[in-house]
Image (tube, rainbow, N blue to C red):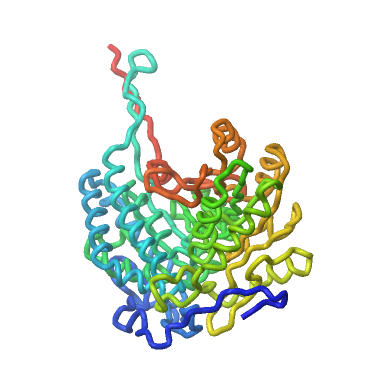
Length: 503
């Protein structure tokens, strides 16, 4: 198909003759998971779970209530003392067993994730692989925690620093990475000796429930609990619950604000990993082909529904035309389709009709404001919530599409004249999760990242993650760190014990 401007865009590869990704037997129980077993909700209200590639309902889950959250929190409270008393070796072995169990069911979980979210299978398999690695890393890291040395810091008084679990942690996970974001929370929370209650997104709960089903026999009852439902009811109750010691959320900025407000009355700890608007700063000496090739993945991974996506290019004016040409060639080559339509599918649908409308709304407003569409620029023919991979150019400073998180398959391109302008404009967004700098200049490769106000800055790459290094942002992107030993620190507390040993 073509856009109104006559630009060639992607077409959606359909899987008319392919077998369905999942069968009814692959689905998890459509219930809450509380105290080691699946239970019905306190009401008969249900939520439709929709396949965004076909717009068909694939499951119905219970709509959780405050009563359901209270029941799960009570189970987590009852289980926390015995789980906390386990020595690190014993908890570590449980986490390794969880990793093994997930690995045994890699293909099932990947297909279930793709059916629920529309992700290409390559993305879902990557999610499962990193889920396994997250549990393995935390299983090892929890056995090697460090602290300041015990010693006399006041005369005749021996100080010992203890690291203790927080207790019960409430977790709220997003729809874009249902299984992986659950793992990023569950693994360090359990490793640190806490129990938890998790509320998955009501749109994408299936792999979280399946995970609970798969590992149910590996964990003591009450250590892991999953309650379905909407954020305004189940999530709000979890955040305000007086027996929850910390609330951890990955989600939107507005969700983060709501959780922080709800947590304030009980003064519980808050861990927030929120949105991003990652600048990709390309200097004239950069390898332009490498940058364009990297953005084919980093800008459109998970269909652009990725808080670290390289979605906002700032390119030096002297090489802008050349770079845009290379980027457009890469983007036009992307394969858009249903996940079962082929292993080479790179871009799937938006997760829901509401999000599809949000993304296409940004594109329509940008075009009406004079932003030029280099490729893509709108919706693709249905069914499904597909948006054409898009590059927007001639984007003026301060434009809505350059400042706000679109969270779709859209890259904007702006130009700059010098280093000072590049740094100023890169930082001039309310979010501060990640960024990248592209240059072959050694001084610049150190100086510019130090001046960028983002929690992760890549040099000559983008969206490369590892379990050993932290992930989290500044400013409106929240606080707290996922992955690495810093996550273990977030989910634990330090206690100072001082012994008087004087005569």
